[in-house]
Length: 607
Image 1 (cartoon, rainbow, N blue to C red):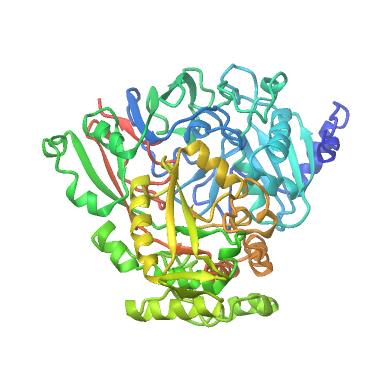
Image 2 (image 1 turned 30 degrees about the vertical axis):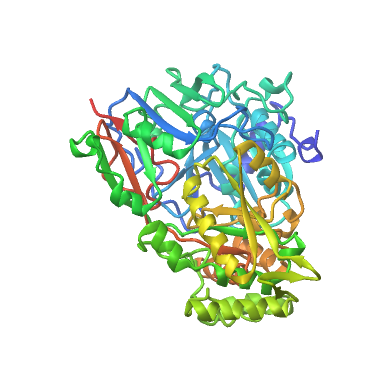
């Protein structure tokens, strides 16, 4: 066993009273924890504000995905698992309120405590917590889950595990993690780690994909599957947590089902025919033109736009800077200028959507585009001045000049990088400028664009690049091939989608950290290695005030934007949802709007 866990205390009856007394003296236990300040809800709250505790129970809710699945283990790199599997069947120590920037309330854990520096965190499990097979959730399950995910799971779990110095049992139901360095976010990150049943894996290899579902403690269990076709979840009638305040008004359906389709067009027709309960429309142009079918006209389908206050995140074509063709920032800037956003936006959205001009657009966390860095940002970036692009502090902004001028600048940048046009073809040392745009035929349920939308954008962009003498071609592969190629960085350009909360933190290391630049399976798709970015992420997670956090996030934003790693698309400040009028949701829309934790979690079927 890992050395971190070798220090697990062997609590005996003789030392237990002293041990518990010592723990209580260090910090007071709390029902919740916020990134900054205190949780909005008191210890005696009876439900989360965006849930309806009087919602009726029963019925079936059917969602659709494109692509397929061949695994029921969503925690490893191998295989393709259904998107919602973990959220519906496996619980965490604490649960997030999507009506606050970043606050957790107790779920498997009845309490949490930590010190002001957040150098450690201690969770106390609810004695009544049970897995779906009726066995208790134990400290041993928690310790095993954390170590296994951190050493054998997807790379996103490894970063937090590397920051744990010691993990120890401090009582019959309590566990404490001591960190290698102060990190305000670490207690919250650990609170959101899935807890699996250790005994299930005594005879199974955790690292291998399997169609055996993990045993969790969540509200649903896997009832039936047809690989690549459908998966059905049934409400566990003996679910241990049904009476907890954090669960009141949640998980109201008896059955949840996900159907898989070969492409989004077929899936949309299935929705129109009534086979699916809901449809998220990511194309505002289609929202205006494609939703006048009979079920809408006669009231069987409801159309709704749900506002949100979350950052735009980033979605666009990402350069793989590991490839020599894209390791020059001038080349990347030239290709950004070749992307005619106005034409693409008019074609794809009727020109209704704003462009992403910052990784944190639509929030105060984003840099002031085109303006000099504020005092706090400049101070954080000063030690890295020699490693940064010259316009980081001045304020980089996406080109928005006349189209002809942009192309002239692009040609000059390419010439500076050693590229010349010969017979209409851009070449260097006799080799043409040619690259591949790799796309997936399946749609990422966490993304904001469908596969056909991305394909359309790519097709337009390929034509635009021809004006510079650049030959790009689009390759669309199935989701399994796509995942394998991206994990191995076997692409020139692909689509990057990153959604952010109002409290970004350690996950930014997964996206941009130097440590993952050449680690297979890393989410650092562009392969950036920036000491400045690494330092800004560290400053974010160590910030003690909202102001310090804002400055660090804006400084990171400046590093990312000025690096010219992504050709940004657009974002929507509303979610456009069509759904069967047989369903309803609470009137109170959470801060994050239509975000994981909203649909179908707090929805219900009308009597």
